[in-house]
Image 1 (cartoon, rainbow, N blue to C red):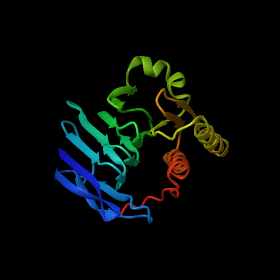
Image 2: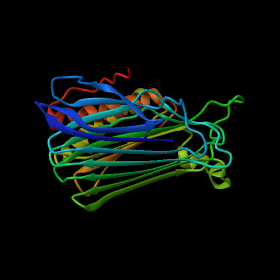
Image 3: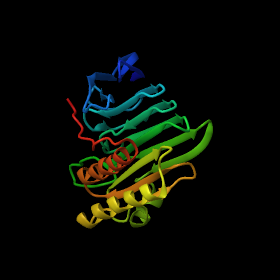
Amino acid sequence: MGVLELGIEVSGGKSIATSQYHSRALKIIRPHYLDDSGQVYYIIVNPGGGYVGGDAYRIKVDVAEGASALLTDQSAAKVYRTPDDYVVQNVEFNVAEGAVLEYIPDQLILYRDADFRQHLTANVHPNGSLFFSDIVTPGWSPDGGHFLYKQAHLRNVVNVGGELALVDNIKLQPLSSEFGQEKEFYMGGRTHVATAICFAPGVTEDLIRDVRAKIDEHAAADESMIASVTATERPGFVVRALGNRTEELLQLILDVAGEVRGQLRGHRDITLRQY
């Protein structure tokens, strides 16, 4: 169980937390500033070490006008056996005019019989910028088997200017007979799935072309990876990637985020500190 609420505003030329609340299994480490842009960097921590059946988590982040925040977590989110229940996490992001929010967590690892359900809702001003991602991976099993978790259900809803801009819904149920019969169709022989979603007023066809070039570079270097990028109706895009290694998928996400940061805001690439 855990709740985290964070409000970010600009003060003295940099972004700071002006409101902060956390309870039980969700906390944040003191802020860092990775460069001179004034963007604040927070690390979310779950001291409990993992999620179990019946756990419920809520995260709410508000980024005020002109403020900028980068969020990650300290380590992978591990979901253990949930034999009689499931883990639920509700996330809400509110990004004001001229604000920036980047959320790049570590991978979500689901072990045997795990059931994880997340609903993320983002409300973005037409002149606000949002980038967030996730990576779903199967946990280690004594017999070396893959896809032994019950369910990974991640539903992302993005509203831009009060209007629905995107519903992205991934529901993996590996133990279902349908998935077992069509595993190659669903995952193309891969074990990991990654998603990156971006909405920002400066996203153009040229930027998406450059993102596609980044994806091609990664796919050429890692034969196990397949990935694509799709433009959204509002300025933005969705990247989906399949692979067999978390490290390569996370680096792809960081490079795509770096392309967006560099072209739209002149910021350097992200190097995550997790301490």
